[in-house]
Image (cartoon, rainbow, N blue to C red; front, side):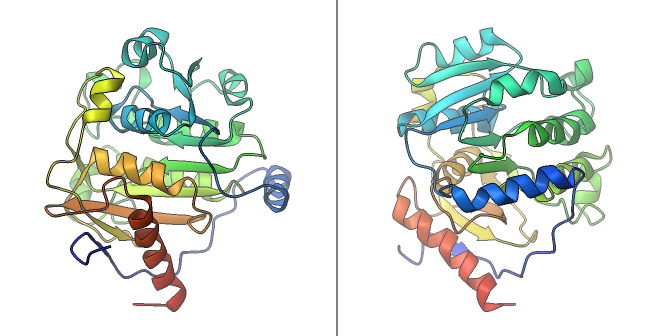
Amino acid sequence: MSSASASVRSCQPARSLRCGSGVARVSQRRAALSVRAAALEPGATVLVAGATGGVGQLVAAKLLDRGYKVRALSRSSDKVQQLFGGAEGLSAAIADLREPSSLPAALEGVDAVVCATGTTAFPSKRWDGGNNPEQTDYVSVRNLVRACPPSLKRFVLTTSAGVERSGQFPFSILNLFGVLKYKRMGEQELEGSGLPYVIVRPNRLTDGPYTSYDINTLLRNTSGSRQNITLSLKDDLLGETSRIAVAEAIVQLLPLDFVEGRHFSIGSKEGDGPGQDAAQWHALFAACTQQQRAGVA
């Protein structure tokens, strides 16, 4: 990997995990870790929550393109059909994350979960029907986490830069209606669950898709010239992140066992980057986690 392709910010040891409710459930999940493979390979089934949203569309399309089976969780079968059609390896799970009873059937037989749900930080039409930050970024995440089987190999949650800086400018403005607070609460629910997790915290999202395209269009999307990736295990990044870069990072970390339990802040800027090169992404994630183990300040 060339020195211009990406960078890694200094990483600090992660904070101790907050214990969630349901001690028996957590113990069962942690016991299951010793009898399952950590890595996730093509052919595995990945449930994508938010599969019709900006990042979720890209994640689902990239997973399908690389041989994974995708279960697209949505409240609308029409949206899934419009976006993915009859794509090979795709199935739809019609469920509502705000309704816990609808989730067990959707999760049956899945190997991993990618949760890429979200709403606007400020009141908008997207809040209609109760899709506000509390319901979307906390309640829905909590319900999904608690419905996951103990055999799950990986849960990837996308949140946001600033979740640990919600009182600092400019994040204090973004958090006026609680979006960062609720995203952090969703993270804490996952941290205390006993599930093998990775949390991805992008900066302000840029690049398409802004609306639902067909799967072939999604696969042609690139992050243009903003392919230089910065990773950090601290919530210390500012700037922008391409949606395409976020989706690629999620797909690339799925087979990696050493990323478990990490929080990766991610930014992208002008310059060359790893693209879809698995070896370069592996090196990026490894460098960041190695800095943490070395105690780099």
